[in-house]
Image (cartoon, rainbow, N blue to C red):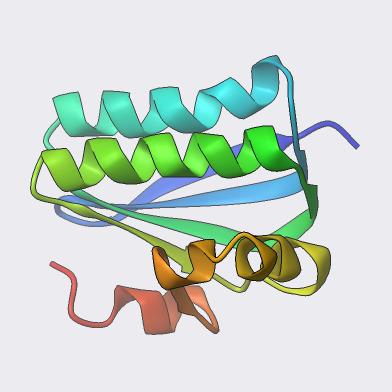
Length: 115
């Protein structure tokens, strides 16, 4: 399944980006970084990635999130992960990136304390 991306602003400065499919090497995954960049230019500082619909992630996909996190932090913002499960959550754990990113059970929990 090709990666599908939907974004919505939920509060001033806070965007939820819902992903569905596989986050892997390829053009669609590059949109993750560009959405963060675009959001920062438009004044958003906090991004929540809803990973409930993601079925698989590879090392390139992980790298996309690292890049987005660095950009958000560099602008004084944050990048949070919501609803990661299965292989996706395991990939963050095996690479120890679960110590770098903040994970939440769902989008609502990730929203707490933002905006």
